[in-house]
Image 1 (cartoon, rainbow, N blue to C red):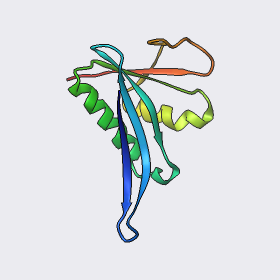
Image 2: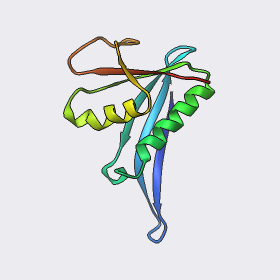
Image 3: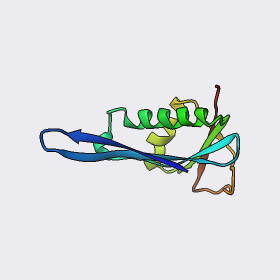
Amino acid sequence: MTFWTIWESDQPQGKNQLLGCGALKKLDDKHGEIKSMRTTSAARNKGVASTLLNHILDNAKQKKLTRVSLETGPQDFFAPARKLYSKHGFDICGSFADYKLDKYSVFMTKKLTP
């Protein structure tokens, strides 16, 4: 598994603030899973989520993966995440890997082109 973080530096104060994180887990030679992708409220409307997602997808392509999937929630709280993934070409799919279909999960997948 590969894990990334995005930080913002406040130069005058010399402080760094975590804005987001995400991971890519290789399920097999062709299929990866996005894990633990999160952004903070300070990241809102700064493009952090899209930047992070694009970085993860680029890394998946470098690893020669042909598909990336993820699991998120159906609750309203996760609506912005589902919208982000849809905007980046993810489609609703069935369960994958060791997941089971349940009312608490939404599964999405995207085919990657080299």
